[in-house]
Length: 120
Image 1 (cartoon, rainbow, N blue to C red):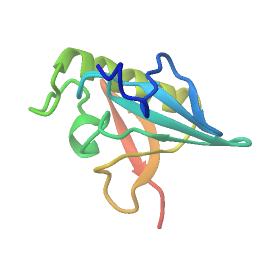
Image 2 (spheres, one colour):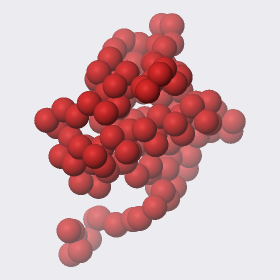
Image 3 (cartoon, rainbow, N blue to C red):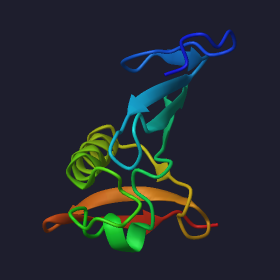
Image 4 (spheres, rainbow, N blue to C red):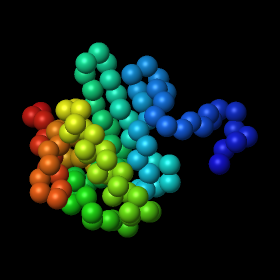
């Protein structure tokens, strides 16, 4: 897509793009969409970007597809994989449209998930 741009380096997988920052593939919301996994020592944080946008809707109901999900089936698969990873690795999560204070933890809740916000 940008093969001749000198200031762009295309990557695949989940490379470390800066110390403690890894790309996480989460396509579907938009083509090539990525989340970010931050780590420092034993501390971790997943920045979902728009993978889990509007948590009250798509975290609780990951099969719901908003008009912004350009590939709804892929967006749902990415969302579920990201939320399952956050649970498995016991890390907090934040995202662009999370309510204040903007970060929390995820747990399974029936066929969906529940976000518990961290105290401010």
